[in-house]
Image 1 (tube, rainbow, N blue to C red):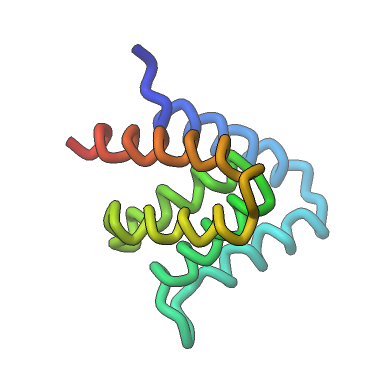
Image 2: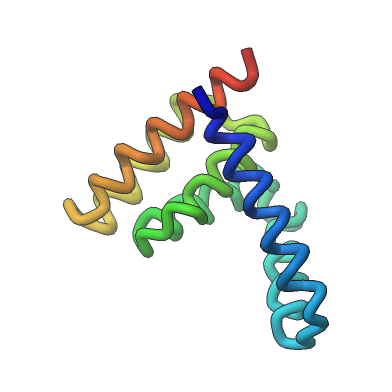
Length: 116
């Protein structure tokens, strides 16, 4: 069975490298802005990643949800915190977010399995 976490990260890295190799100033600046926005500041990294998870779920971006789930886990978020965050996202986004909630839960399980 393929490892979904490794597949996602490999594809993301490969395509980011290709995009950045095009040397488009606007794309590079957006990537840099995104990186800097999630650095430690008045809010800690975990809180920022969980906020990113809410926004990603509400905006229904599955790739973004996966990214922020993984980043939240790396920043120390536990399953209870992630589930509470996804609950807020579903409340704010409405029932249209439920399919993304399912996929997010499945990906969190994949992250836990990859850690074991």
